[in-house]
Length: 155
Image (cartoon, rainbow, N blue to C red; front, side, top):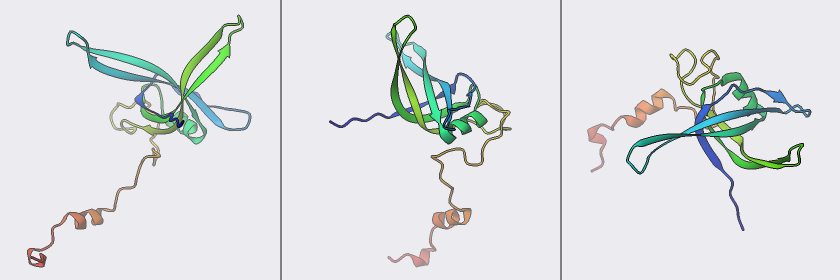
């Protein structure tokens, strides 16, 4: 039987990322993400509910998050769910569902843009996303949008 484990979340960081390195030299950071949901209750009133999610980022993604993001920064994270289990010193079994982030996109305004997005004191990177695609050159846009002269129409 096939299975699929994919999560896409957009929210704000609840704390500054703290970068660390495991013995093999791989970067890792754990961040908290607050995801807000707004819906109407049975009485027709709008109710806001926040869900707090722990996200682990690895490698270059962890380094970028640590360098450019801070508490309150808005991000989009794509990854997978992972169940961590452990036993306390008292012998109690514990578990926690976390997200292992595989892709991250920084959202919000760049530094110097007048607030928002959090982490305003940090400079924004030149290419801030794995999802970004370069814009076509301006001259191509002009040619594609201009209509042909009327006497070139074949009918």
